[in-house]
Amino acid sequence: MLKTENIKVRFAPAPTGYLHVGGARTALFNWLYARNKGGKLVLRIEDTDAVRSTEESTKAIFDSLKWLGIDWDEGPFFQSERKEIYRTYAERLLSKGFAYESEDVKGTHKAVIFRLPSSRKIVIKDIIHDDVEFDTAVFKDIVLMKSDGTAAYNFACVVDDHLMGITHIIRGDDHISNTPKQVLLYEALGFPLPNFAHVPLILGPDGSRLSKRHGATSVGQYKGEGYFNKAFVNFLALLGWAPGDNREKMSTGEIIDSFGLDRIGKKGAIFDVKKLQWLNGVYIREMALEDLTGAVIPYLESAGIVDKDTDREHVKFIVSLVQERLKTFSETPAITGFFFTKDIFYDESAVKKYLLKEGVETILGKIICGIENEERFDVENLEKCFVKIKEEMNISNSKLIHPVRVAVTGSAASPPIFETMVGIGKENCVKRLKNTLSFINDGDFPFKTQNVPPPNPIE
Image (cartoon, rainbow, N blue to C red; front, side):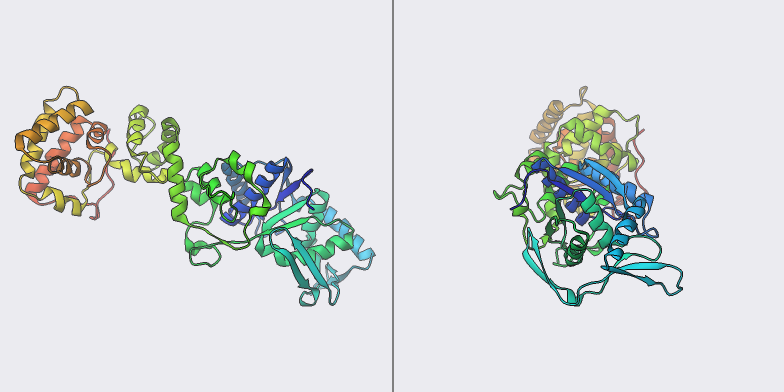
């Protein structure tokens, strides 16, 4: 029976690259288990590979964990600073006859090798996969200390997990083949075995292991693409684990309360980007407008369509118009760009469908006159203006609104037309309507598909 007190788990990434999705989920599952059980999470940086380990990768891992909201109770510990500890335990195995030394090809340094039993069945009692059996006959002797004086992965891992008091090792399935080797080292060193839980890997839509060919794989990429960290954590938690009641949107607190290793599946979980986008959109729609505005402004600034001097209240109003449509923060510039720029570019299909029709020039001309005569440019007065023109011309709402929408936004889709026009502003609406009339007469629209420079921000 598993203990439920004094739980201690660890997350032990190698700083040889950014924190990928699989590693992030491993970190999350360890953190959730620790928080659910009132235990502790240890952060250990396994940087024994001096050639591939970098400070940049270490920082990226820390930044990604903090973005995910994963904190740790002990550490970070760095294996590169623990060489003498590993050497001490290697010498203990040498003295007991469990290991031997082997010179490298130059004969200048000696590696320490653990001698495996020739044929022995080892059964791993895995929390997720139940009993998994291995035969040592298929393994080679295990390197403990390399000839350069650094500890090998399996050895350093065992020594550290014991000394740090790790009770549960929760990690990916790709480590399960290391487990029988580690079990032998635990036994030889006289260490008690921890509990093992190997989590099935995350798979791409084609059922193969998630990789770069499936799209973004690092946490930093998803942060940069404008995903809300709470939504990403929610999505990540459901990759291989289920609360048991078909819930999909859960707060971090709810996930912690429900989390357990017994509900982790035995099969790989599919990383469905469309589901992530949907869930992210749900979170965005529930965000406070002020918070959402703060989240999207960096993307608007990066796109060059707002700056620090742009009226924040105006930006907030624009964001309120598109909040229901956003799936990620990074979509904001593309969806709202026409609100902030002097000139717009037109969708060719929208022009053909709504602007190149008989009577459109008359409609746009009347709208221009109506707008110019309005003292207050707000939703209420715009609606009155449109109703008046519709009655005068005896036309439907759609025949009036669709051409105006394309004329002022360049697209057939936008937030509600009156709010949209208020967001664009009276002066710019009039200018765009007049420009549209000119383009209709000249037959020369600046289409979005043309190779045109990006629009200039409104000054």
